[in-house]
Image (cartoon, rainbow, N blue to C red):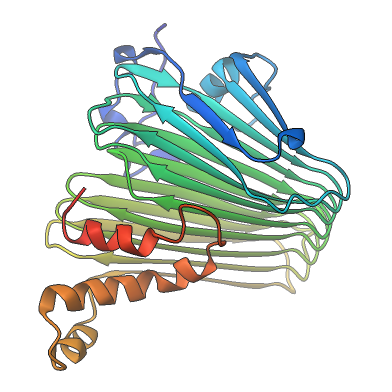
Length: 353
């Protein structure tokens, strides 16, 4: 592919990342294999490349590349329509040495409702890059639930983007589950444009071996009486790493808004590392905002309590970690591939693939 200028860790949005390891020249243009299960009348799929996507003013290199090369899937929900069955979109990356740009647009019209699960899959021997973008557009009183599940193999990179805009009295629930990938990054931004708009952002991430999970979030309140609630929980073991940086922005006209941001991390090994950087930018009074972050090992008192009752140390650790993730797991919607997450986290704790 043609030469491009890669971002560096000197840029704040890429601080702590592994972007310096990326050589885009290694990859040729490729595609994911996409399957969609759900009500056919709500799905419009465009498999060919398209130039119809316009990059945002604040977009970066990878968003621009996606916009220029996207394989686009559009999910449109009509005014007043409720789609009760979840739509499951699965992207499989089956070839090494390629870069793929899947893009999903969710367009929920006034007073509509939809749930979408988007899965990303590759084998452990697939050394490629996937740059997915999801655009969520929630009109007045629309209700959108979106779940991204990263099941990528150990050699695949992901640099992903979630962009969601909510109008008056809308509700957007955005979930991320990240267990796979070598370096897996998601930049998740929510903008509440209409009075009374609501958003929830929830993530579970667990990195082992030499993996790295990297999350950058924005809760942007651009209208009065809006509300956002973010809960991200992660764990790292072996020599794995994680990064979370988040910003709550309350604009001058967004009076009586409420915004909450919580990031908590467990370090399960001496060589594991996690970074958590919450931020506030408030331009008006009469708002409620809070942010909290923690990084640390398993609570010794919890471990001791379990071991004192005859539970083996390795089982005690699993129970503590599953309890730590319980708050996130309980918030996830009851859709396929979610029910077995506790078991998958438990298996990863044991070091199995």
